[in-house]
Amino acid sequence: MVVWHVCTVKKLSRYLGSGVILPPVRAWDNIQQAERMSRHSGRRVILRLCFPNDTPVLEGHSGQARISRDYYRFVGL
Image 1: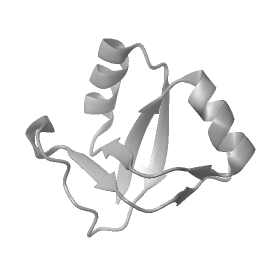
Image 2: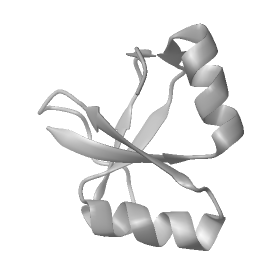
Image 3: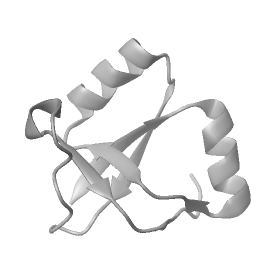
């Protein structure tokens, strides 16, 4: 499934340097929710990630967010 992860430029730099996103990896089911989160939090970067279809729903967030407890391999942009 395609999900949307919101982060800062500093975090993106860490992801690129290490090659992974450390768990827990939280992401939104749709781009509109990710954009809303970006505006509210001031995090300017939205990344498109692919999670397995059985990734659990993150409690709260109207059932529109997912959480992965695994390392996410991040190759780059």
